[in-house]
Image (cartoon, rainbow, N blue to C red; front, side, top):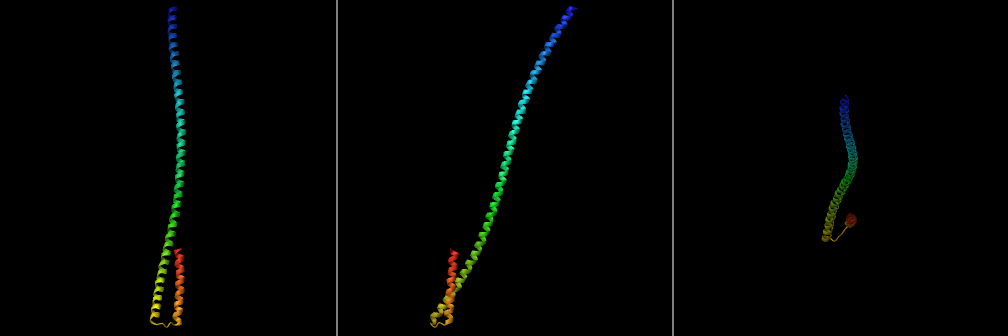
Length: 151
């Protein structure tokens, strides 16, 4: 009976040693798994911070782009408005120029007519003298306008 108990104790000691070895192995695996889990969590947190930073930078770049686009659109509108104003001014100046040229042509014709009439008859009446004076005054005024337009 004693040898049976002794055999049973040996078997139990072997079972206890095997259980202890299994426990220590499982404990080491659990510790390694916790270490790996902690490392993965830290990596996830780092990646999350980088993602948030990248998103913030992208949002800032998007806002800056929108501001620049709005600024360029405003500048474009102002330039287009200026171009329209300059085109209108150019057309008005061309119309004035055409009017001045036509008036100068008419005055030139009148002067030629008057001078032609003076060549054939040296008798000048007071009406012709008044007409010549009026024409000379008109010519002087037109010359002033031309000087102003050229300046």
